[in-house]
Each structure stands twice: as structure tokens, then as C-alpha cells.
Image 1 (cartoon, rainbow, N blue to C red):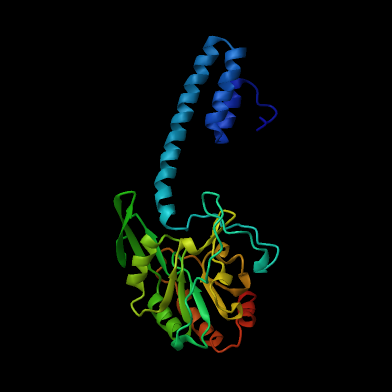
Image 2 (image 1 turned 90 degrees about the vertical axis):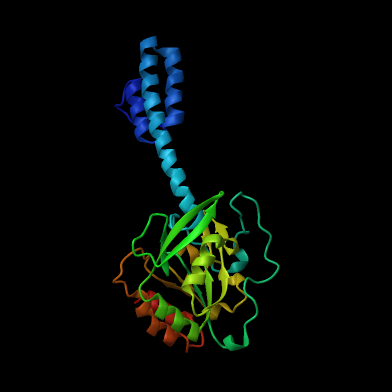
Length: 292
């Protein structure tokens, strides 16, 4: 990266690069120049600066590793500013991609089983978990509704789970009106026990986890075309626009929730869904919702 005009001297150049977080490569590159072009005292001075910079870099890496454990389970730390596909046609979607860069095989069958007799005629509502229905943290929460033990790399971690206000009323009513599916980008080892505790009424007819997502441009996307349901009768409720980037016209966006106990969004949505359940298709009402 080019050093801005007006910055002269190897020490100033190194300092600028450190500020730009290019510590490791930049510092040693400058040291290489020093060996050829400077006296021994300059080399010693720069080595001292480099040692300090690398020390700060190691501290930063430790923080990143600590955060990565949480990110392994949940997907609330992902960059959601993704570029939408140029078309909504699923025939032009990219192939399924795993995190290691390899291609996934197309699913042999749809993600959902056949409709049960009790759900015939009902629309399908796909509901997200984290920051939509609950908020979870490794940090102890004094008023946590659940504490879920999760094993990661041979170590048991306690996950503290807080329920969003009115989630019970919301789930009960949604279960009466729709075929409800839990679809989360989190790992099943965390999300499954949380769902067991959250869904006391067996509202969710199916549970889908990270392996059912499409990894697209750094995000786990929930491809509604893989569910095996008519898209004009499918709704997704999610706090992350990246999750429904393939089918934004099917989405009911909700605000991310963390700890505001005065929040009423789930309660406020119930009348809307009661009306939507009576419509022939979902697009008209969803369009009005997103443009009001």
C-alpha cells in the first residue's frame, strides 16, 4: 500500500503502516530495506518498534480467537451488507459452497418433509432463532431464561439464553395459523436444545440448521426454493437481510433484539400474520408491509 506524500523516513513509514494494521508484513518489509540502506543503529531501533507492534498484533489475535468460539455457534457477527443477486430466479443461483471452498452436491430431496394432514392449506412460515426469538451469550446473564451446556473442542461452555418479550404468545399463535419451521444458521448442537426449551407447544414442524443453508459470498443464506413448498405461500421472519437475499419479496424483516425488555415487535406482528393467513398468496401484503 502506498505511503501518503509528506511521510518521510523509515520510522514514520513503519508507524503509518502499523496504524493501518499492516504490522507483520509491513514491519519486516521495512526491516529488509534497513539491512541494505541504513546503519546498525537504525536497524536496532526498527527491531524494537517491530517487536512492540507484533506484541500488539498477538493480543489482537487472541481477542479474535475468543470471539471466534462464539461465532462458531451463532451467526450474529456476520457482515450483512451483501450484494443482491441480479435476479430472483433460482435457476441462476450459484452452486452451493461449503466453507472450505468445495462444492456441495445439490440436495437429493427437499429440506422439508411432506405436509401433514393438519397443515394442508396453511402457508409456511420460516422463523429465525438468534436475535429474532432469543439472544444468547457466553457471558453470564443474570436474568437468563435458559442456560444451555454446549461442547466445543472437548470443553463444555455454558450458553446463557434470553427470550424476546412476547415470544411465547407469538409462537403459540403462529402455530395455530401456519406450518412453522425453525431455520437458523447456527449449529444444531446449540440451536436444537434451545429450541427444545423454547418451543413447549411443538410449534415447529421441522428444524433446519447451518448445514441446510447456502454459503454465498460470506453469508449463510436460507434458500426458500429448497424447502419443497410453493414460494407464493412461504414467508420468512428474520432479523438478517442476508438470510433471505435470494427471496427478499418473501420476507418479514424484524429488528435485531438483544436485551430490551420493553420490545413489543413480536406482539405487534400477530395481527398482521392473522390477516396474512387468510390471503391467497403472500406477496401483496408483504409488499405493503415493506413499503409502509
